[in-house]
Amino acid sequence: MNFFLFIFFIFILLLLAWAFLNFANTKKIFYDDSICSDGSLKDTCSVRKPYFCSNGFLIEKSKTCGCPENFTIEGDSCISEFQTEPKNAALKYVLRGKEYEINYTVYRGMADYLSELPVFIKYDNNEFPSRVDFKLKNINEESQRNFLLPLVNEIQNRAYDKEEQARIAISIVQNIPWGFANKTTVFRGTELDYSRHPYEVLYDSEGVCGEKSELLAFLLREIGYGTVIFYNQEENHESVGVKCPVEESWRNSGYCFVETSGPAIMTDNSLEYVGGFILQSEPEILFISDGDSLPADIYEYEDARTFKEIKETINGDNFFVGLKKLFYFKKLQEKYGLVEKYNAG
Image 1: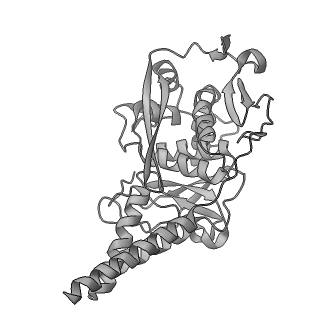
Image 2 (image 1 turned 45 degrees about the vertical axis):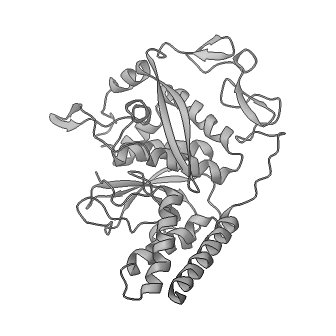
Image 3 (image 1 turned 90 degrees about the vertical axis):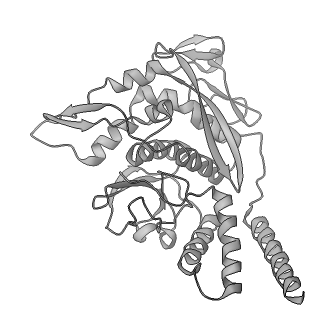
């Protein structure tokens, strides 16, 4: 009887400790309706047409703020010739164990337009494009940008705090299912798997690690963070790096590791991939954009360290240590909606 009371007492202590840590990890965010999350002042137009800053929220107001090039004014919205055959993309994200959803309208017209763009890059003087050139080509496509910005604005309207916006963007991309396109393309006489643009990932509701990494790099860049893409050639895997303190960064690169193929804790690079391997090779760092850095105090740093330590010792012989670690392990899985293994390629 005393043994079971002791176990119950330990469980209550662990529960209270977890509640305290969750409270400590939750930053108080003060809402200011005199400015919008993109930096626009109240009652002024955003640099992103047709958005207007109203009481802290970005709203469409095309008659006041105008429309991007090749869009026409219709009511308070801007309309494009590519806005055909709309459908809803239900974008799931998880914040501190709670699941949310953004209903985002995507259009077949834009997806078809992107799929028909040439895949090659032509340079003069016999120069050959690099891997980052192809990444930037996909990310920077201007017509696509105007169709992705409404998602950026929705993310920013849901969270005033910039770190929280990054968390939403990361979780959205991580929760998009992993999958190859059912199309191929021919490049220099060789048939290759078709590589989707970021918008096509949203339209198809799936993507491989490289495609999803391009989408996340776009979202984080538009939110204002410095971003890179990590390419591990040996493992044939791509992930995202977001600017952060060097001591928290991957391989002292100045960029924190962010897995995109599935839900994971930012900075946790000890993930196991399908096939039983982890990333061990030195990554090529593909620079995408300069921007702000994550601060030194976000809770993901400690959560990732704790999670890695638990994975290393969870099968230990000490029963009570194992019980404590299993408790934290389960709570961290719930907090981030984690999966056991990740897809590469």
